[in-house]
Image: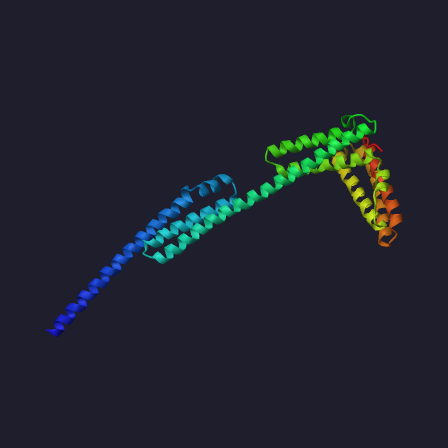
Length: 291
């Protein structure tokens, strides 16, 4: 009797354990199924998913596709009864999608920075244009619009703003920088070039040399801004300009050697000569720089 009852007891316990295991599996399966649904909505129909899809960003779109693959693997894991694996795959899918969103956020931050930089440079150029016009009238040379540089600056300004409006902010910024260089050099020459430099208070000859070095660089940039296209279309103009630029290069090299030897006062004079040759190069193209 005891043995029979003992066997019956063990059978009942086994049946209870199997029932509990089955109920647990069903609960886990139900939980996993619910999680699948939530993650599917996130990856396929959420605002984050739509933002990635419409962004055109290949990296972000690729991450969403990875998330979709992980979601499909999670479904297969549930079908096979591997609920722990499914849960891990769903976590990976969620993280992967949000990595895609993070890329878009970083891109937007970069776009905002470029736009801010563009606006700041535009404000600087507009201030230089206003100063150019004011100084031109003070010098009795009429409106800035009557000069050779002023129309060039404004053409580049208009082109830069058009590019910005088209979404090409970086390309527009390049034209703004060219307009800035032209306006900056134009103002310096309106105010008397060398006279302006002499009125500045330098703490040492080395500091003045550094200023002249920057001034020489700015004039060189102006040659590229104003003459690059002209020289490309006219070989005789290019030859004429390069004669002046070769002299300017020779003097620039001599000035750098003098500065290396600590002879800054002589280097300043040599740099000034180099810059004057660059001005001659610009004027030889038919673009008049006052001063």
